[in-house]
Length: 275
Image (cartoon, rainbow, N blue to C red; front, side, top):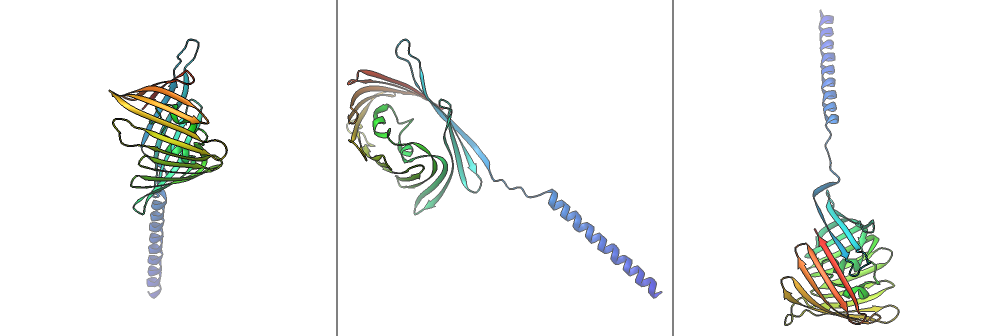
């Protein structure tokens, strides 16, 4: 009788142990078959914009020149920040492809980015929206605009500071119309564009101090003629000399430009489409 009781209890313990093991295996199988999903990269409502810049032919025998056809897209990197890519179909090249991260700092915003980035010169040049004419080309042209590396930006109440490292070091600062740009082995540019109209005039002046050679000066003024029409007066002296007059017309998503160089007696035209 005693042996029978022991046998029954042993069998019950074995059955209980087996049931527990099976339950544990089932729970483990359930956990493995339904792992927690972690999104490392995903797109938040991708923003797609761009612009097309064309120099139309003005004389018979000439052809239209497609200067830029840039498509921009951006998204989010979960837990880190954002990304952006800009591709130029005119040159079949990547204009920018960078990851970005922003965070508050000392009452402002600090941002750092890495990849194919805009240099300090590329950060503050007004193209394409603010570039109404080639008035600053001789000032900005010596600077590089795109490079592979990393950069930082700090923004505080209208003050923007940039420091970018690619194949060269560059830095820039802008504040309420004032700007300063420096790039290693190129030089320093200082300029001011009034953010306010002075008797309907909007003058600006920029100076480029080359590390080697003469300085370059560029002056510009514009005033409104109404209905999206502006009149520009441009002057350059120093390394490059020029005196030009021009008109620009802004209509939704399109900007028309026409300038005449009084000194060289040449004409410059351009059409910019944005979307």
